[in-house]
Image (tube, rainbow, N blue to C red; front, top):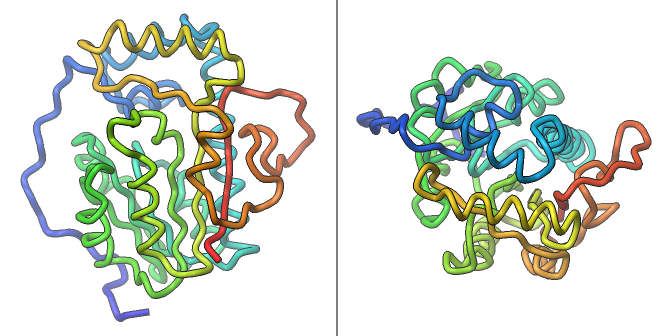
Length: 278
């Protein structure tokens, strides 16, 4: 790898204003995980969407299942695939069980770049991102629709000549086809070398279909109080994101069924897949 500071920081720039009158997906997710970095509007949207899906506890169970999948997959990539670099897109608010905490507990020299467009994440990044001395954890404000800018700025921390894990956890279902998410993912994967991995979790249109459709309609009706709606996709549509890659066993499954630490018969409406670039 190239020589870089142990904990490189992006150039200081003015913190964007935080609009507390409009919900943000990262803060809604934080509320569903039981965090406190959210506002009343985020709680309102989370609870309204959860009611459309089957209730707050049901929704929180699935959100926690997605976070647990992320942890298992990161440990796999560090311990079995030998990955030491992570680019986490649409990260939300990092916590101790997020990528840097999980990865650096397994291998202290791991390097992580988080990307999100929520100013609140930037506000808290300095205190939330505590890297090991051997590794690095950095945060950049960025928009997934501009992958070139993300890759350029992430290169201050990551060496794209070595394998990188591209993390797209619960983010692509916020991007309708109008944004061409397939092209975005392809560009990110073009930038990383063979041996790199991609992780995707995504809300499904063909599992728990009625509840998922209710949730999508509820989000659509209330766009004025949030910055997001849901673009649900089926198994075939999700497979397109990892076309030409080697799927890590057990392939495309629900988040609960991806290498569970204990047997589980529960299946949420969220798909999970990890794939390797050959």
